[in-house]
Image (tube, rainbow, N blue to C red):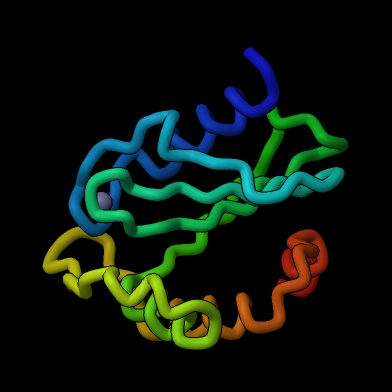
Length: 130
Ligand SMILES: [Zn+2]
């Protein structure tokens, strides 16, 4: 089992399933966004409804076995808001608000919005300040 498999295992332990459509996540849903010493950024995209979660895995000395995971959820609305500032071709994402399960609160969405706006890839700095 290599590092990426270990991280994916940890992510699946924490996330289990899609909060929007409740589909069980699979290893193949997880992609590595960026890896830096001590911090590994991952994205989990639901194959069924294409909702996305960004995961910051904070590793101790690059050891994924001791990784702390920070899960950041993006609602479809937040996705559209973000897309407006980036590219128009995500417009096809259909807004279907989840009716059950864990809801992403408005505060979370705002935090994510601010977070992405100012995000420079340094998750460790973010976690030190919280
Ligand atoms: Zn889903």
